[in-house]
Each structure stands twice: as C-alpha cells, then as structure tokens.
Length: 129
Image (cartoon, rainbow, N blue to C red):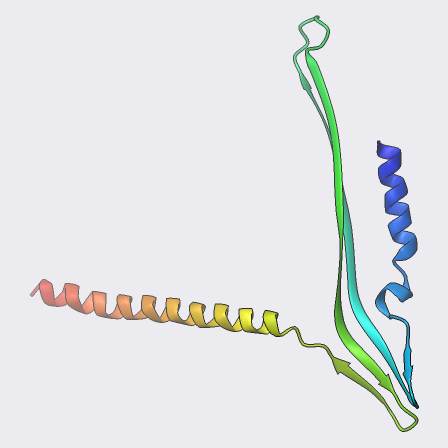
C-alpha cells in the first residue's frame, strides 16, 4: 500500500512542471494566447497502532491511510502580438461576490454590536436614575 502511495506522489511531482501552469499557446492570426493557471497539490499520510498486550492474539490493531489532492484554477491569459505582450488577469466573479457578501455581513454585525453597546449603556444608566 505504501509503495503505491509513494509511486503516486512521484507521478504527481513529475507532472507538476511548467506545462501544468502555462497551457499550450493558441495562435490566432498574428496573435498568440497563452493560458496561465495556479496549480497546488498536497498529500498526507498517517499510521496507527492500538491494542492492549493481553497475551492473546488479535488484540492489537494497525491501520494506515493516505490522501491527497490537486487544485488548478485559471489566473491569467498572456496575449502576444507583434506590437506588445499583455497579461490579462482572469477574475473569478463568484469569489469577488462572495467576498463582498461576507464584508457586508461583517460590517452589519460590528455596527449592530457597537450600537448595542452604546445604547445598551444609556438604557442601563437611565434605569438606575
């Protein structure tokens, strides 16, 4: 099992080179377009053993597990023409929208907490009079 995991890790390392980040150039007339991606990979491995030494067979248990993953996402396009080279970022609109939603919720939460702290103190001071 562990040999198979190490073989897989070695295969991924061999494929994680520049062609995984820069795609094949596409020629359209005098314009060349090169896609660019961000590629990340990771692996984990664990072993374990448990049991009580009772002198009986079968009271110990061993286990091993492993896992990994690869993530690739487009980040830019390089456009090459006879006049210039331009890098055009690829925007992930879904991520931008999600970040905006979370920022708005964060602002509402802290505004509410601030108002509660301000007006909660006034109400308690007026109630003590």
